[in-house]
Length: 396
Image 1 (cartoon, one colour):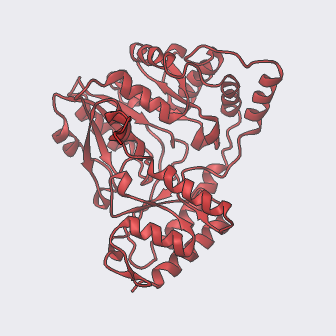
Image 2 (cartoon, one colour; image 1 turned 180 degrees about the horizontal axis):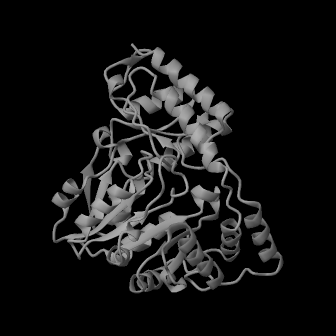
């Protein structure tokens, strides 16, 4: 039977992280004791002020359409957030609220990219970047990085990849999947390259900005007014506030570009759910500063365990809530007669036999690594590390 799917959709890959998460949840529903370290979802609850404001909004009938870019009260509060947290000035009409950070990113690619435009994407990268770029008929240009540079792209390498077709650079700091965070000095050095190329814009994905354990977050938009004009900051409420299901993201940038994104969004989703926008205001007024220390403790524990395990090689992350060990030394070894030939085999055998869900690095552009999320409590993380240790001990 001939497919009815468009060429565009037929050529993109399913989300690897959501696929493994779906499988893990199916196994859990079937009664299996699975520890799910595959998904980037904090175990923290929605802030109480966020819940109260949403409930109050429902009770008062705040359930109609809103401005498709977001209610002015939320955009004013986000403007205040940028000033207080990032020392950046964005007027409310330079900010648009979207249905999650993923939607914010897709809006940008669709608004800025023409067919054949190149988007520079340092690898490892979050799984949806490359597929969204393809959906926009643009071309992902992958810069491979590795442990030798802590998975960071250097100015010289970046310069060598820029062409007259380059439209965007995607910069994610702290990074999913590696946890790498660029220092201020490294950001300034990259900006020095970009300022020589007026045709190149930057997507600065700052969804993990509050989760940096070594140093401080520094946005490339802070480098200069010139860089700010060519930078689109993407952020959201899923990671900082544990509000993954609310689907709340936002973009800040030059007024002309935000106006274009708003035009595009008005024909796709229109506004974010009305009461979710009220919840966002509540969340911004109820940030739990203790959670950073909680995630730091989890990082120290998981990294400490993983870095001592046989066959694994791991760079210590500076942020987010992932470790990204290299498992290449397990390739060619066998688990109960089954040979491990890839990181996908590694993840499958670990899930099937020791009931721990993690994600292969293949979809992140780094096939010899695996992503382990530590967004669970220490008791479950200890059990997961014990199971991983036991799995490795049984390799032959």
